[in-house]
Image 1: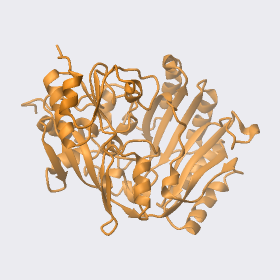
Image 2: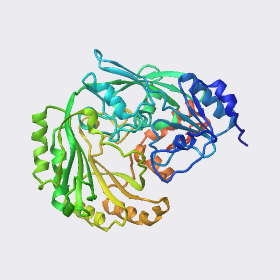
Image 3: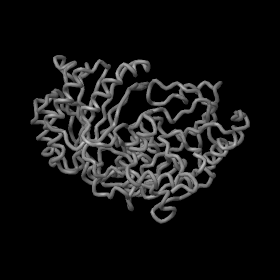
Image 4: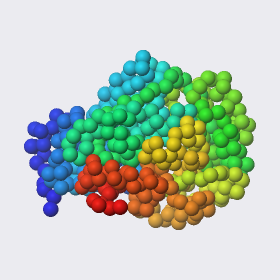
Amino acid sequence: MPETISIEKLRTDIRGRVIGPDDPEYDEARTPFYGGIDRRPAVIVRVANDADVVRVIALARETGLELAVRSGGHSIPGHSVSEGGIVLDLGDMRAIDIDPESKTAWSETGVTAVEFADAAHEHGLALGFGDTGSVGIGGITLGAGVGYLAREYGLTIDDLLAADVVTADGEVRRVDARSEPDLFWAIRGGGGNFGVATRFRFRLHELPMVVGGMLLLPATVETIAGFIEHAEAAPEAFSAIANVMKAPPMPFVPQEAHGKPAIMALVCFAGDAKEGERALAPFRALADPLADMVRPIPYPEIYPPEEEGYRPTATAHNMFVDAIGVPQAETIMKHVQSSTAMMGVAQLRVLGGAVARVPNDATAYAHRDRKIMVNIAALYERAEEADTHRPWIDGFVQAMRQVNDDAAYVNFLGDEGNDRIRAAYPGTTWKRLREIKARYDPTNLFHLNQNIPPAEVGAA
């Protein structure tokens, strides 16, 4: 049986903040980004440094309580909070040290993507994370990091030079290509399975401005297929996230378009403004835009503003496809129009570019050759609606499937079972990750994640 925790004693041992169920900030501290998750941990520790992290890991070992690790709290299945367990919250570890001469930075992992972007922008530099400003850089980096700059500069992990990781034995390890290279390989896509990453060293890129923002187009079979065709042919400096959905009743959307299929595209051109305008021209020519907010902006402004207190509740499925032409566009239109959710959406991302130039086995993210990532999602108001919309998701996925595997990007997985986790790590990647897990976390202390179990001793 797990032991109980003395909150008062823990406060004497920890430099950071210790939050218990009786503290006024407890409810806010235990609430993750996504809705429908209501778990009550025994304690939340907002660690201040590596020593605090070591102590919390030891506490989890000593008590047998489940350990959750939180950076920004954006885990889709809610892995950043444990029912009755310990939450190790990195949110107070926010130091960023940028070296403009070497174009590198050390950052603690409680920093959010937009906070890092703002700090780097002061020096005319940038680094690609995801597409949400409030995401913590800890989780998104460990999962690989697919974002607006991926085609031009690669995944976040492709700019990761080193990391400080506290492993299950309480050791603080500096890992890079030369020091503990197997662990360095594993944390680049293997998620939080191998320890608590407290600090990252990144390579940065000169990028004071981008051409970016939202382009809203009417969705038809022709505009969907055309958008993907242009995205595949565009310069690598161009990336886009095309959300095909019913246009929401927002102020910038013409009233006559409300509720009708639209492509809400978030686009980013990482380069010269004139070149960016040329790259955008084919997309704008697909149809008269319903809204066009694309313009030269500082890179941090690429992150859309987030409504305070917004907690999306959704059911989703992530997959890869080889092509989206007219037949697939017809499928997308049919399913988006038939959704009964508050929002039914197909999110399309053309990959390639710098992502694909890295070998599949160079990091634990092993989908380098995949061409298009698709997220199919239903957003709704109440968690109990999940089962209502699952058949729509399943039917949509089956209609879009083009390959035999069920491969996925691990950061976009929900609570979908072991087979889906296994599919996120194809080929020999899974076996190698399990072997490394057995060396650094043989008891699976770090299991509240998309879990990679340690290889069994003596297993072939």
